[in-house]
Each structure stands twice: as C-alpha cells, then as structure tokens.
Amino acid sequence: MKKYLLLILPFLFWNCSDNNDDGNSNATNQTARQDMRDFVIGISRKAKSANPGFAIIPQNGIELIASDGEPDGNLANDYLNAIDGHGQEDLFFGYDTDNVATPADDNLYLTSFLDRSKSVGKTILVTDYCSSADKMAQSYSKNSAKGYVSFAAPQRALNVIPTGNPMNVNSNVVTNLAQAKNFLYLINPESYPTKSAFINAAKATNYDLIIMDLFLNNEQFTGSEISDLKNKANGGKRLVICYMSIGEAEDYRYYWNSAWNANKPNWIAAENPDWPGNFKVQYWNSDWQNIIYKNSDSYLNRILNSGFDGVYLDIIDAFEYFEQ
Image 1: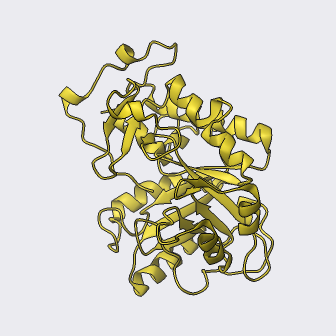
Image 2: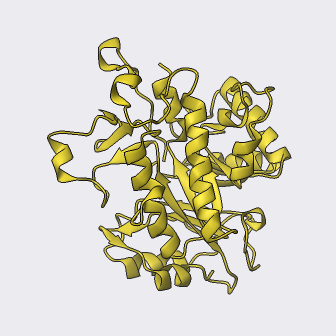
C-alpha cells in the first residue's frame, strides 16, 4: 500500500557511512537505486531457489527498470530478469487525491516505464483508488486499453471486497501471473474477526489473483488455509500472493523487538507520519536483510512455508528517501 515519502530536513538526515559498519554498500545518491535492485534480486534468488515458479512483484519504484532512471535509459536487465511483474498505484486515479484523476503528466511518466516493462514480458498490476462507479469503470477501461491488469480500490486502506464479479471474470485455472485477468488487493482484513471469516469471504469471489497479508490478528495463515484460498467460487484456481514491505519496518510485525521502542537500531530511520508504526530502514543493512530473507525464520521463509504463489514487495520507492 502506498506510503507517501517524507520531506527530509537537513537536521534529520545522516551520513550513511557513519551508520554502516557491517561491510554493506552505502545508500548515496549514486547507489540507493542499485542497492534496492540488489535487495530485490537477492529476495528473488532465494525464493526461486525454493520454488522456481514463485512470482516476484515489486510495487511502485518503476524507475528501477532503467539503469539511469530515465524512461529511455538502458534497461537494468539483472533486475528485470529477477522479477515477474510490476505493481503500480494511482496510475489513472488517486495520485494526489482519491477518486480524482491522476494528472496527465504523471500518468505519462509512469506509463513510459510500465510500457517498457510490459514489452519485455512483465505483467503490470495497477491499483487505482476510486470509489464512484463512473470512475471505477474508467479505471478498468483505461487500464485494459493499455494491456494492464487492474483493481479499482474503493478504499485506500485496502480493507474491502467490491460487490459483484471482478472485471474479465473467468473460470480458468490460473497457474502463473501472465494468466491473471483481474486481481483483488485486500491486505487489511480488519473487518474480518477470524481467519475463517476472511477465507470464506475471499473464497466466495472469482478473482484470478488475491494479494493479501501473511497474518490476521497476529495469526499467521497456514499452508492448508492458503491452499483453500486458491479455489475460486466458480471452480477455477487462482494465485495467492503475499504482501511484504521491504522498505519500511512495521512495529506490529512479529520481528519487531520491543526494546526498539526505546532504542532503535541505527538502521531504522524516521517514522512515516502518514502511516504510524512504519519506519524507513536502511534496506541495504545486513540486519534488515536477515529479517526479510536471509535467516532461517525470515519473513520470506514464512511466506514460502505457507504456500503462497509469490510476493508483492512494497516500499520499493524507499530509494527516493535516501536520495534527498
């Protein structure tokens, strides 16, 4: 879910080399983007070594596909080869304000990258934030015309299932990302009191792909529960993808050490004012990367062990924070 970037005042910024004594590269204006590419590549290699068909989908930060961050720049092929698709928020609606059309210049900028990614075989998943029927219809029409798979989210909290069938509904068995014709983005299951209630609500839909969280009320979904969720109501099969934030640490996650509330590690940066409890991290730091994918109880291992079909990586655009 989109977490708006902070404006960094000079007195809040630090010299990355002062806090980075573990042999990792420093995130400077020159390396912040490559550090994020390398992070995603590492996650992909780990996941695909366990499950070659596991989908890697970074959300936002689409500029990473070009080595110089320009729409016509040389493609960063190592990064592109590590991923299967791109998630993009606010492409047609919601960039400045929910249910308001995204400015044409911003749309053009984003689509210039997204089209290049699509041209090399990546699936584009767009989440527009719009709630009125006419704008939701426009969102689906505009994304379809571009060849993107889309979801018109009526709430930015991503906590509701829209009524009715999804666009382009089908009863096909969906076994890879390229086959998906629609998706549901539902990562805040706050209205469901139990995992069973959530599962039953999701199973009653015909979405080809569901993006969801690993937990509900701090309870992790099991392999059998995720397997159950892969059944569409119309008899087809779908993909179930797990959301994971890699550019911010979240103080409500299993990995959060209560001691950090008083004394945070030096790789945890400022709190995101738009999302309390979410903190920018020096994502190149080995301690953070251990939490995400390198140790035996890593977030990624938990996702793999629960039987998800892929991972949806959020806060990819954290590199912008470290480029200020």
